[in-house]
Image (cartoon, rainbow, N blue to C red; front, side):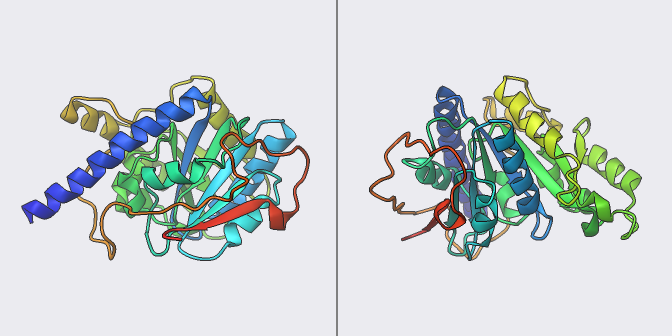
Length: 290
């Protein structure tokens, strides 16, 4: 058992180091990464499409890296915004890791990108312990999921720098108790902001983009208590989301062993053309191990 725990800590420590390097590389290019985590069906893809569309309208250069176990559905939806999108098919891996993100950005991320949204695999357990080199970690939850979700998934919510409540247009219909939800959030992560959104009505879209841009401008996001405890315990600074608690057993080997395929035309810093891009050409798909 001790050897298993030690292995998990070693994997997370390696990921932390790679994430720190990636964060520095992105900062050198004036790129801010935003890690979006939620359970499946929270509506994060629909909301992200609205955010990317609004970014284009505001002449903000944004891009998206979206991960799923299978299908290109999310990338096709996000590509409708006109933003550069890359779909990562994880081949069964239930979360993204820093090494994967770094590999898929190489030769693809447009030079003028200011904000990179990383849509993590739909899961509130596995992704919680992995820093992806982000500067802003966002956890999303829909009103249809129940008010007690923050206390059921304390690591994911406890390390969030912003909590986004989605599908608020359905709150009354599903009798969502927002006061109870807010109390649970503050119990797990005191002081974190809860942003109310609806992809259907557009509520909160502008504000979510503004939070990302504020991070770009150097405004320090919320620092969760759980993250500060971890930093003190390890005696060094990492990103905001390292709990390094034991992670659940997975069906895969810890740590990615991935080969990354890139098209020959994908040269570093390749800039995307202005104007709308046909949906079928607006994104790339990369399968792990391909």
